[in-house]
Image (tube, rainbow, N blue to C red; front, side, top):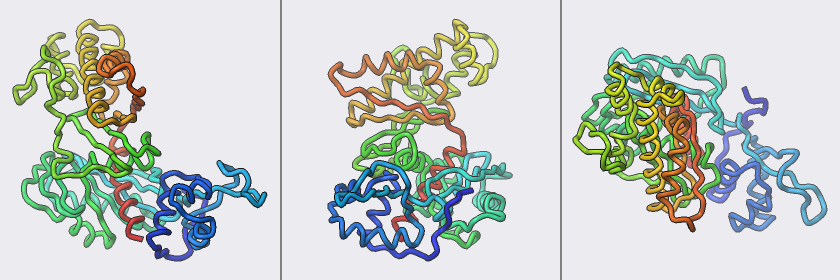
Length: 385
């Protein structure tokens, strides 16, 4: 685990000290002069705010970094967060399993585990999370907070309103149930929002105050960050981009839309199209393997999907004015196999004078999604200090 020690005392921070800690967490290692400039603080005020954070072990001084010398001629060491200061359990719930990861304060995975769901009821989910918490934390550091994410609508980070993959249609006080069982504070989040928080705070979009996350897999997910804040609303996480039209000649989706994002980009849609052409059932990975090897049927389907993905990426960038888009999800390998088609469609969909778009492809598994849940817990914990 982490070599640096945990804090010696519990920290109670003022608003200004919290702002400093967040600045270091999100952008560190960072120089004191940079922190003071960004937060509008004097050198004396910054010293007063950071000293107790360093003494308590939340922040550490690094031996090398962006600072060279202070105005007094003494070398100034940049500040970084102590990753061992606190630990968090992140949990991703799917329709058939629960995935957990123990992380440090930087959302770096330390251990992970998985449990199948015997059924999809709340009691089964709570029991699975309890087992995973015991497994991931056995003999390790204490956990400060637990984050849980799932596909659905969550109110106030505690009550699940709907969870289609679990078959939940009525309100479930999942946060309260888990908090009572684990004797720990628990925050519950929509899985796409949680993943967006992780990419913004600790992932490919770190340091970008505006960015978007697009996921492809069993469905189409979309998250947006504006002014360093994840955009949340009652419609977040319900698949608003699922039926955006991308190809007027494309296949039909289950709702009867021709060439929409669901019809063009989801794993099941690609498998169905290739299976029809080859006259035999084909898995998603086989679809991509065949396309990469030059099979005419799979290559056509995957190339068309790549173009559709590029059109969707270009539309997101054009409407939101973001420069950074992160592609993730269990189906993201499509973007790698069809990268040439994706890039071509992005270029066609953007005016030549537009600022170049930064497109990151993130390999994703359920541990990656669980880190998103841990990030929600980290965010809640730091903001509550």
